[in-house]
Length: 114
Image 1: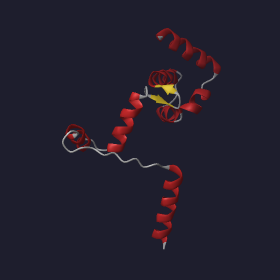
Image 2 (image 1 turned 90 degrees about the horizontal axis):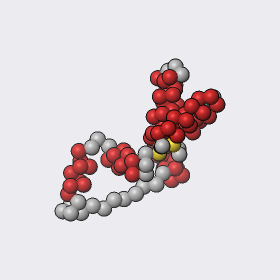
Image 3 (image 1 turned 60 degrees about the vertical axis):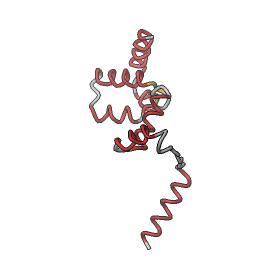
């Protein structure tokens, strides 16, 4: 009984929160792609990382450069590694987490690099 309930719960979650995409590759003309996919541990993770890199490495609207800069600013302020991990994992709230003085410094640093 518990297994059936779990299966239904998983199916309901998947229906409401996920979308499956099928990718059809030719064994001859796409052999190089298939070989590379066979080499990686997580095909899904690899494909998602490539797409995110193509999109400009953004996470919740922040570029990779901005996230690195925010992380460096946290280190300078003495924020611990776990807090830093949480910070990067939740970038939307993290930016608000930093007080106004730090926000100004981040924006100045970003403007210098542009």
